[in-house]
Amino acid sequence: MLISGIQPFTILDFPDRIACIVFTLGCNFRCGYCHNPEFVLPEKVREMRTAVISEDTFFRFLSQRKNLLEGVVISGGEPTIHQDLVEFILRIKKEGFLVKLDTNGSNPEVVQNLLDQNLLDYIAMDVKTSKEQYQSLVGRGVPAIEKTISLIRDNGVPYEFRCTLLRELHPPSVLASMAQMMHGARRVYLQQFRSQTTLDPLFESYHAFTQAEMEGVKEIFAPYCEEVFVR
Ligand code: SF4
Image (cartoon, rainbow, N blue to C red; front, top):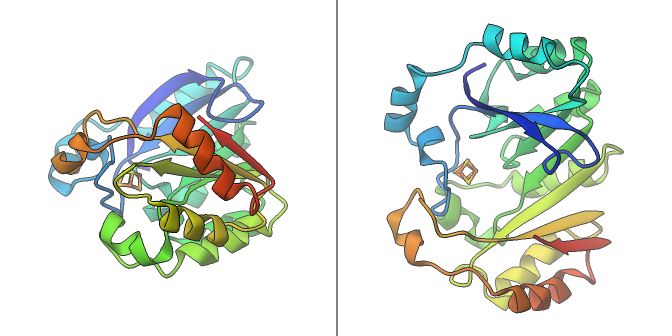
């Protein structure tokens, strides 16, 4: 596994668990608002490759924290683009840790395979925009997104869908379409965009919704999803 970073401790990213986060290198999307371009753009990834953390280093880190951590969050980049993801998770499980996967939902077959093998204890999937707007936001066609939503939603493994929202990209019609795509979802988190470093510099001038506006956005999702949170 190409590991670009390790966050040694989190109580926020794996619900009800004390965990670490391992960041995998590379992504198949090009979201303009991405604030980790060094994990995504090929030229940056090439630079990062010289600084990847070896699996041995990561597993040494894990073995030293067996009594301190309960789980590992595998985040990116996009973890499902890596051929050795199954082996990587099997090794983490063998060490006795729970696994949460963060995914952009672009590879339903990979997610299905992981679910079939009972390798996941929690899944977080980003739902970025309406079906019609996906290609222009992420830079590629994504007919698979709805398939991944369905298989996560209809599986018994705990999950959440996460939506990062920007005033310029998410008018009410797009928000309504996103809510409908996730109909029946158990838990949805609406996240405010933060204009820091962005993959596309244009997005640095884009705007987050205010807290009050986010509460209004929540009302659009509420009829379709069991629990909707703003964070
Ligand atoms: S925001 Fe996530 S899915 Fe989009 S380019 Fe960045 S890492 Fe990839």
